[in-house]
Picture 1 (cartoon, rainbow, N blue to C red):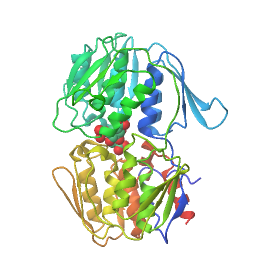
Picture 2 (picture 1 turned 180 degrees about the vertical axis):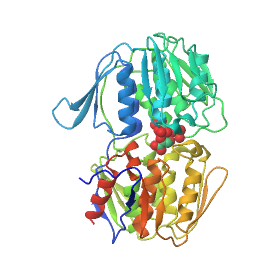
Picture 3 (picture 1 turned 60 degrees about the horizontal axis):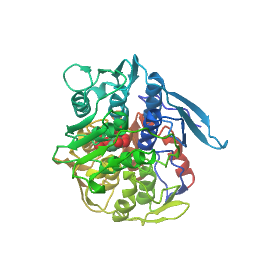
Picture 4 (picture 1 turned 30 degrees about the horizontal axis):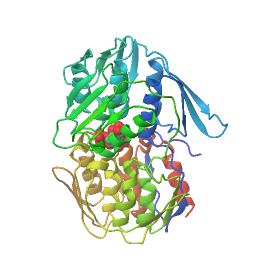
Length: 439
Ligand SMILES: O=C(O)C1=C[C@@H](OP(=O)(O)O)[C@@H](O)[C@H](O)C1
Ligand SMILES: C=C(OP(=O)(O)O)C(=O)O
């Protein structure tokens, strides 16, 4: 295995000499792994997670739960095959200190959990975590009976003064800046005395598939959840109080992290197979089958996985990505290499992701000779011939993978701090070069 590049190093993004033809085993989903860890920690009996993602965000989640008293054993699964984690839930403890890094799932999902601890839990993280919206979670928890000390900005750092229980009940939240506010309150909802009824008051709600993922995973561990889709009021989710079961759950591959590999097939006119692509899933990355088909590829979903084939042409697209915002950097990279312009809409909230993704994509693609402009809620991308140069990544894993996609088609692209992909895909440089080696 190649040594991990230093954070400041420039990684020469490999240029594809021909059409890629590879099978890529994509590691587990960040969003599923971190929900599964939280739900297993809140359960009344032990549970297993098979094929969990081991990355910065998921190890931060596991360490945070351990700090609150949960035992998580990492090792080989119950049948002796493959990686699995065993989660042994206990009473949640404080005092504890949690490092959220820059993981949205950790900074949003754990303050509700901390209200159930029997002492204070202090949350801190990377400098960027101080800028990411958290007010929806803080205000809602206060309205539900929690005591939280913050510096008045409605953001990190903060301390949740857990007293072992939370009243819960009805609460309003404006989740237009992050769907994770809703997911956070629902995940701990079964453990609140009165459960929780979350009413979204904002005019837009991003990343709906991620809220569906929360609901599906809650139901899979025995929670009763009423949703707008199950006949409830629009914008209202209700979770009944009750014990959660310990389950044996196999984590699906991360379909958003499959994106750069599928993009490689698209931009080189090649073929990439991703084994274990689920036939049915709430992961937003499943939308790539449709989006990348519209951009020029074709796909075939079999029992083995997804086979994605490029045609040799890449087309622009006009698409609302509000449901699947985390796919935007990879789609923007492909769009910059297309034969016609693209408009990506519905993603204003990306300005408060790992970095301001709309500004970062605009600047970095334009510095390679591109023609991208920011709109109020997205990007216009007019393809132009690009040239090599440094692609800055702003500690954003998806900026790094976006740069790698461009590097396939443009010689001399050097990615700053490719190691930032460790947030959700530590093996990225190795998987990428192995995919190209298979060409
Ligand atoms: O709940 C989740 O696992 C996620 C929800 C989305 O967050 P936002 O709604 O803040 O965009 C997504 O972008 C993020 O990568 C993961
Ligand atoms: C927005 C993302 O992450 P987070 O969970 O930190 O919000 C992402 O992975 O694209």
